[in-house]
Length: 162
Ligand code: SME
Image 1 (tube, rainbow, N blue to C red):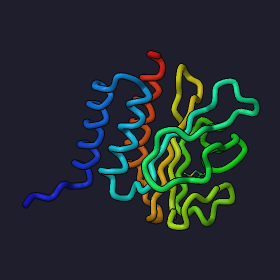
Image 2: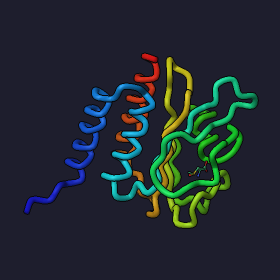
Image 3: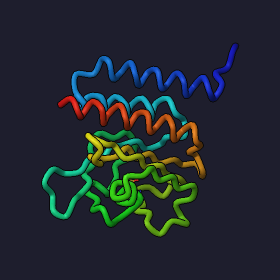
């Protein structure tokens, strides 16, 4: 039986995200579907979720939205805390290969070893982020980063239409 190569897998999941975007009725539905897709298809993506900036909150606060994986105690995160706060406040993707060595890290699960957080931009401003935790160290390669950034971009563009 033919096995799927890594590159094929990324391409397949990317195409599926594009298809979900075309079919989704709203950005909210798209976020739900993307969390499901990434958690189901990418074996090392053990927790996948969106945090969105709460409109009008002072200080600015990230609020947990759709997610797949274990419950997390971190449902509200101010921008000065966590890898999540770092990605949202800098507007840059943050990849942490070993969460134990990063002082910013807010623990959700004892099993988490690495994490990627990608900002979601709406009209050039950070509106939220896509956060993924892995039970494997250094789980996020440049290909993973490209896939997760693509998914975050789909959501940002979709939010621009609402
Ligand atoms: N680890 C994150 C907190 C969110 S959980 O991963 C779901 C952080 O350091 O911001």
